[in-house]
Length: 120
Image (tube, rainbow, N blue to C red; front, side, top):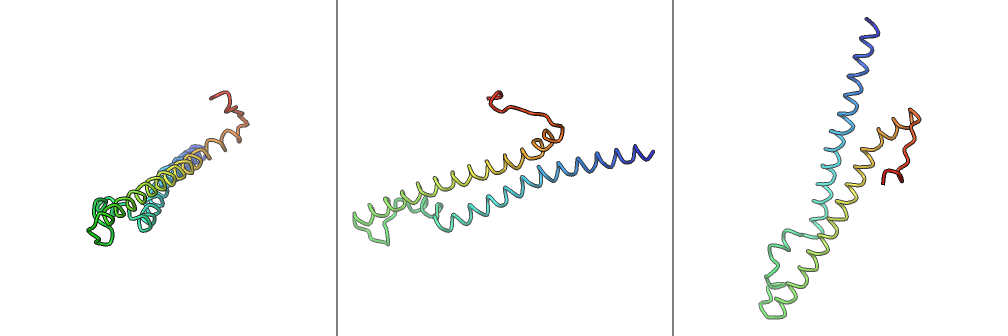
């Protein structure tokens, strides 16, 4: 009886650990990712730049105002997209490392050696 109870509790604890590690961890990464993008949007103003890309700079309706507005906003959009892509890549790599920690520790616990160069 006691062994069955301990086994059931261990199984529940293990399932709860993996649910917390992967499911809650994913949402933590996603929330942090969205907050980071929101912070970057205050710097780069991607939506505003996209909305006003063909409008003149500083309400200067001359040819120079239109050229400056388009050039400046285009550069800002390109910079924002590159920055967002880089941040997304960093968060993806960080989450993949986070997700690989439990299997790695289990493999080390049972002394199983996997040669990654053979897998590639």
